[in-house]
Length: 128
Image 1 (tube, one colour):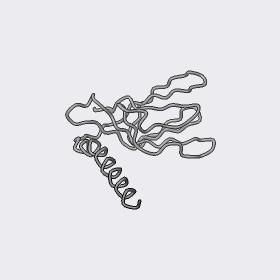
Image 2: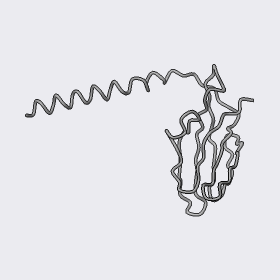
Image 3: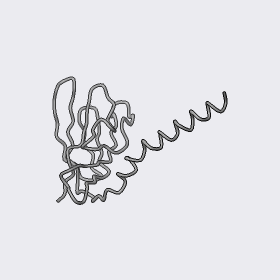
Image 4: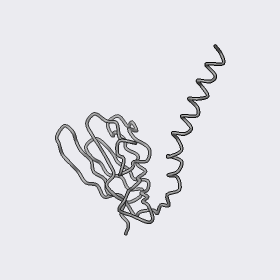
């Protein structure tokens, strides 16, 4: 009984480790730092779309949110292929941090702002 459970756990650990291999292979992407980021914000109640052009360290208010850019990085060999933006998004009314991390332009659902009213996503890094 105990041996069969240990064997099952070992198989699960092996499968989990193998599933992580593709993610580890992506760590070799060389990136460059952008001079800013282009973001888009959607107010889901009013359907208002706002495009944001932020420099590193800059913050802008969108509705009740404050969006602050830490930095934007992009693949060195192909600047138009993707963008990785480090963002801090806070609610000015509650002063709560709603998002603090990296958003990826090519995979917006991977690391997304979780808010009932607003969506914010990365479009691209500024390269000049």
